[in-house]
Structure formats: structure tokens, C-alpha cells
Length: 123
Image (cartoon, rainbow, N blue to C red; front, side, top):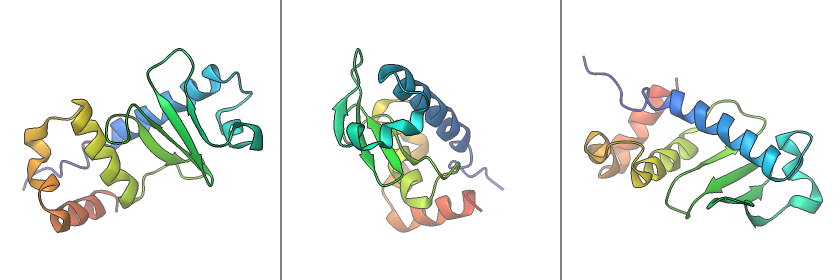
């Protein structure tokens, strides 16, 4: 039996989310990271002093270098990823070089396999 490669990515998801929360809080001088969702901070912004950007949405935020590279998209009220966000996370982390392309090529090339593998890992 082989190890589900997505299961191995879940700890990276949590680490990236923790990093993003600290980055947001410190870069925007907020009392807590969720304050980025306040009306005056809504929208797309360059994160001061970094090569990162963020975009607020609903109850969450998307932190990225470019739309397809690096970062994480998460909701503040959900500690774990949903399948859609995990898929985006994997693609961006592979593009960033944080995950080896060779280990995820078969998933990136097959949408149905990617979906099944993610759903299995997130059970």
C-alpha cells in the first residue's frame, strides 16, 4: 500500500496558514489576523516589505506571489482545507518548488485522480 501524497501535504498546509496569519497581522499592524477582513482592509493589496500579495474574500484571504505560485487560500473559520483549496495549494506549492513535481505529476495530469486522492486524504 502506498502513502497518499496529499496526506503528506496537510502539515505544510497548516504551517503555511500559520505563517500567513503572522505575516498578515504583522505587516498590516493588526490586533489579530482576522482583522484583515474589516471593511477598511478589504480587497487586493501588496503586503508591505515583501514580494507577496493578498486578496480578501468572504471570511478568508488568498496570499500569493502570483495567482499560480506560492502561498495559500484559506478561510479563517475553517482550520482544515476543503478539496478545492487543497488542489490550488498543491498546484501553487509545486509551481513554487516547495513540492517536487515528480511526486505530483500524475495527480496534476489527471483531474479525477487528483480529486479522489484529495478527498481520500481529507477524510
